[in-house]
Image (cartoon, rainbow, N blue to C red; front, side, top):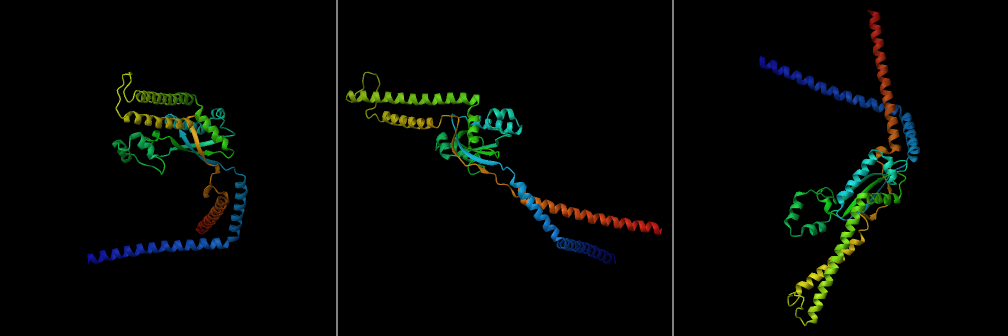
Length: 330
């Protein structure tokens, strides 16, 4: 008897649960039906609101001044990558703080910052890494195992200091021009610290070229003396191999080094040297910022909210009348 009562109670509970679920879906269908009927009933008003919002959004967006963006492939010389990255961070902070005096002095302010934000990322070069650590170096293998690559052309921040080429992405104001990019590059290069680093780095590079060329001249003198003496060492107390292979190889290596250093000198007129610049393009506005789409949506939502509040008010007034009639009857 007890088991039958328990089973009966469980059946009642399940029946009640199914009934609640059924009532919930029924109410949902009714609500959807009423909402659709409301839209059909007021379709002319809704269409007018959408057209009005789109027209207003078009004319207001037409007068908007769209920010621009550009990218610059930059070569950073004299092992000053960390200094350039720090200078960019300082600049971004000045923009955030709206330090107009600082930006005006740099020539990067015109009713607002001309360069609104800068992002720098290294251009990964496996050839550069291999030249630094050696192709057969175990350290190189460990670096590739331990460090994560974040994008197609960026690498962990611990390695970015080893690269010479970097990409600068600039977000610019609507009134920025191509000369704005040049002024920003000039800003990076003309800070007192950068000026000093450039002078020291350029002088060291030139000195290294001079030393290598002097060494080549000394090797040439030795080779000439060796040839003049008929293959015998001169009185310079220098003993040479008979085939002079090592000395000739050294001369070739010094020549290659000098050529590379001279090529590097061409690109070393400044700390940060732009290699290529992209054209200035207007930032593509997202759909949420597109006023032609945004304004109609806002106006429709306001209309629906007003209709909902009106319905709630009428329902509340109906309940109040029913309550008043009950009170009078009592």
